[in-house]
Amino acid sequence: MKMETPSCCAHKKKPWFKEPFYIILFILFAIFIANAILASSGIYFLKPVVQKFTDYLDKTWWAIVLGLIIGGVIDVLVPESLIVKLLANGKKSVFLAVGLGFLASACSHGILAITVSLYKKGASTASTLAFLLAAPWANFSITILLFSLFGLKALMIIGGALLVAIISGLIFDFLEKRGLIEQGKAFKKDIKQEKTSLIWPGWNILLKKVSIESWSLAKSVGWWVIFGFLLASVLGSYLPESIMDNYFGANMLGLVATLALASLIEICSEGSAPLAFELFRKTGAFGNAFIFLQAGVVTDFTEIGLIWTNIGKRAAMALFFVGVPLILILGFIFNRLM
Image: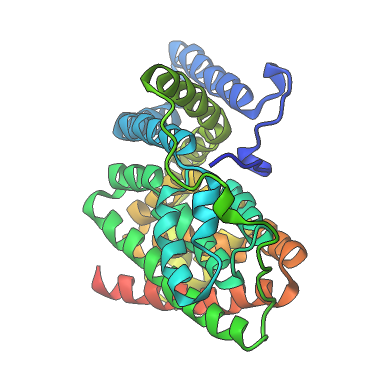
């Protein structure tokens, strides 16, 4: 899907040394060098961070690479018009939007750009918001990453995300049809005249384009992954267990505290996955990890603000007031089940 994406998934031309991807690589390299120098002097302050980061990378490198390749294939083969055509009307478009979220290949902020684009091209408000809720945690590349971290428990995260997206989408559809939230715009052009089938450019061109798109995607989301790994490694190494147990445990205080944390930390889905895993590892509260992952979409100031300005204030408020209770309920249930 070729769309311009702001924030973490932008593809703007800039000097390489100003790109976040290379900056975070430099920081990572500096941490490893500093650890080696300090260790040679008998100081092991950074060793736990380096060890945890290495463990995360060892667990997930294959998932990251596979996800980037799959994302590049989707970007090359799936035309934007095919997706837009399916999301214009009714409850059926809600289910299609949730399903097509699986085909998205961008981080949570990049998904927002695609979401706004879909709305402006004629997708209904309900299907647009359902796509926004489903895509960050149900798309294939993130699915692989979640499985590499959580194992089979990732199925509960993905299933929960899909359930929240479907129920929310149906509620949004009800509200939209009654004019209680902003309604989607009608198509202003004949979508049938556009190419709405999968694009097959030939193997040579396909491999070249997929390589380019995968590398572009790697630079866009890779720095969030590294940042998330580093942040999770720091928290896992130095954050006292008592704080995690007292404030982020499997209780109502823990659920609310996790919701607040998800609202404050603006990290792409690729970066927040390891943080959620560290939260789960420290507290054993799987429901809290789910809330941290899913609530970021419906409470993040960037998401709410852009929905407010591009679709409408009622849609933004509905996203929050419909999504948050559903996420909290599922988080509570997951804590009781696990």
